[in-house]
Image 1 (tube, rainbow, N blue to C red):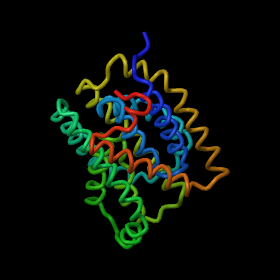
Image 2: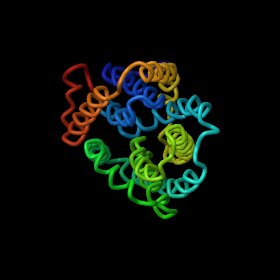
Image 3: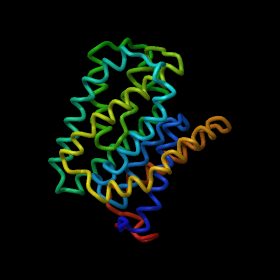
Image 4: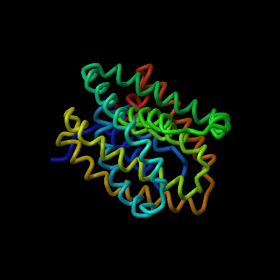
Length: 262
């Protein structure tokens, strides 16, 4: 039997999964951050995160094939230990507030606002961090922050970017390092998600239905990357992220009135 989600869920799910695939292909930078908040407008935060994790791992498989020999091993080794701590903290957050959905919604909304602020202040942040020389401790700290935000919202890229930029890695090496790191990070998130009971029958059924869209999103991202600039696309996505964050924080879901919410 197919999952009985409202129409708004399927609209948001299609958009979220396509965006996630496009981002994995390298188009639009961190636009994949919109996926979890967008989906959380129509289902619980936990369900949104649990549904997207297997799809992220499926996208990782395609990406790792291209970058498995092109990444900075030292950076990955420095980031991973901290990421495990961050995943543990994120799992505790989920477990502790599992019966308080509004807390999770507001937390996710605030996290989304932080990433919007990061995007607008990216130039200044990049200029500041490029003068630094991050060592092992910085790797552990950035890995921990990335692990936490990735567990909550599948949005761990900014801390990793802040850590990697000062190292002046070649573009392919930079992309490859993020691909390999997040492929490992997503696998590390599976046990705590399972232990918290975030996976259930409807999640698996829905994941199978949406899986082809993840692949289509990757293909679309490759197509867009070769033909278009992502500047205006980025602005549109982050504008949507800002609107989504405000709705999560205030609890005023415009989708409910438009096409049917939860």
